[in-house]
Length: 267
Image (tube, rainbow, N blue to C red):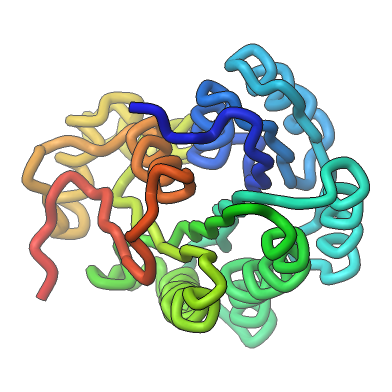
C-alpha cells in the first residue's frame, strides 16, 4: 500500500527513542523527510543515523526542550527555514509516573507542562507550516490509562486525558481546512527504556522485562490489566498505526482515539 509519504515533511517530537523513534523510522522507510525534536544531543545523533539508514531523504535532528515555549518555537523556526511547510506532526512526549501521595504541586505542573502544554505549543508553532502544505495531518500519542486507570499514573493519565480532549477539539476546528487530527492510545509497549527501568522489578517476580508475554503477565498480576492477545506490544506496532493516520492515504479518519493495546475491554 502506497501511503503517499514520499517527499513528505514530518516532525516527530520525542523521536530519539522508543515509540517516537519507531515512528520516525517508519516514516523514513516510506520516503518522508523527518525532523526529530528531543532534548538529548547524543540520543538525537544516534536517532538521526538510524532514520537516515531507514531511508529518509533528509533528517533534521533538533535539540528542543519540550517544556520550554521558546525552545519549541525555535525548533519550528528551524523547520520553517529548512522546508517552508510541513505535512505531518506526530507528538509523542509524556511525563513520568507517580502515586497521588507522592506528588506535590510542582510535580502536577510538570506533568501538564510535558503531557499537555508541550502539545499545545507544538501544534501552535506547527500550524502555519501545516497550513502552507498541500495536505497535513496531526497525530498525538495519549495512553490507554485514560480509559483504564492506574494509581501509579495519576498525573500522567490526567495530562494525557487532557491531550486526548485537545486532539478531539483540534479535529473539529481544523477539519474544515483539511487538516486531519487523530489520537493513538498505546497499551503496554516494550521499549528499551521500559525494559531497563523495570528489569529488576520484573525479575524479582520471575519475569523477563524484555519478553512481551512476561511483561503482560506481570501487568495482569500487578495491576489486573490483561489484554486479549496475552502479550505487550512493540514500538513498531504503534508506529504502523500512527504512520497510517499521519499519511496522505488516510483521507477520512479524523477526531478518532485509536487504541493500540492488544485488545482491552474498557468500562
